[in-house]
Length: 138
Image (cartoon, rainbow, N blue to C red; front, side, top):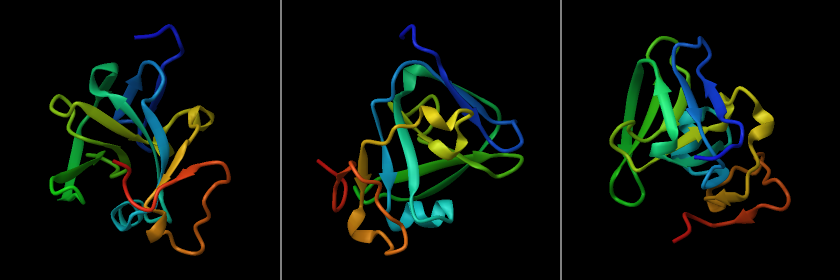
């Protein structure tokens, strides 16, 4: 862990919370159809962390869909208000993806990449300066 301020966030009602220590491993915007439908938006802004630097508290409701890599993509919603908060399985996954819309301090989100830009709706712009990938990078 690091001496930097933790990154905190959670759901709309406050019942599902997380604290992440250290800088994210990656951060970006995903324009794939799954993320668009899960978020109800043109993309999902995300931050990835090693699972061992995140503490999650509260009840979750999982949703699972087939991933493009052949596995299962797991998203976690608050068990009370239904807010979409993070991806992965706490206590099982090696990494956890925090959805930036759930951050307490949105200024801590600094995206670096844009994924699945081939699937981007014309009305969902890509922020200038992001490294763009047609799909998921290797």
